[in-house]
Length: 54
Image (cartoon, rainbow, N blue to C red):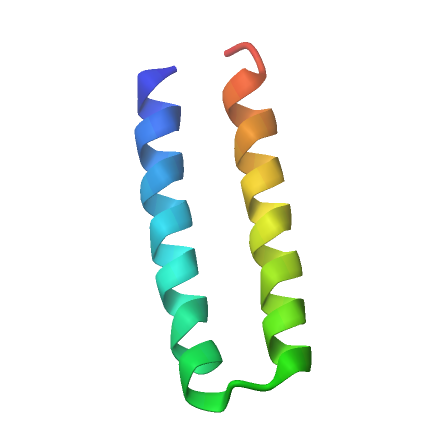
């Protein structure tokens, strides 16, 4: 359980950092919306994975 939590948080942090670079460089509204939807989906999947039993 703790391993899934730690590795999931590391993965989410890396994904947000990876997606943040184009957002700050391009600053297009459509790109920001698409990236935020993708990050929200990743966060939802992380929460579902952590809540599921081993």
